[in-house]
Image (cartoon, rainbow, N blue to C red; front, side):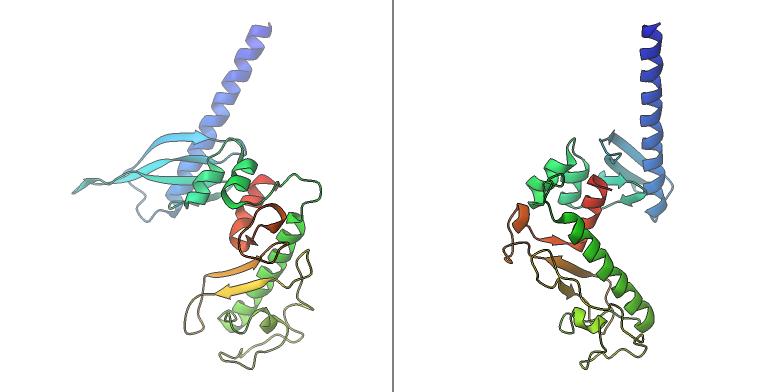
Length: 226
């Protein structure tokens, strides 16, 4: 009887793994410009549910391209994962990989400040999105996050600044410093921006409490500690 229970449990696990890998294939296909003639290989599911593997596209006229790595976590897919993505998502211990790769963590430490940092960055990010929706651009690096509180006197000036601003006040990091902000792009149009804290020491680099944590790291924190 126990033998049959173990066998059924094993079959259920294999089925779940197969389903997750199929979901990963579909997620990646949904973001690829060419959805036909795509081949996959070496798909592996990791603790936490991330699936890593390789894919290539087959051109009937030119043949196969080289295989490229990809990562799928949750409902998100990345066809061009960064080295950090591969190191953290494609790991048996994502928390340890985050600490080793970026110096951030330990996430499970009782006194860690990461929950507050994550909440603060999300609050600022939401305000930036509202600002962009109203004015069709983000504040420049020079204007800074203060542009969310009152209309900037520096160009480009917002044409539809919301009454009362986008935040009642700027949040400060766990060490009492305002979060830093950088925006790339010219002409007032930018899709790439960064919100970050330099950690307890206020210096670039470091690990543990001194680690720099930015908006681009939230996907790792959400994956490890949803």
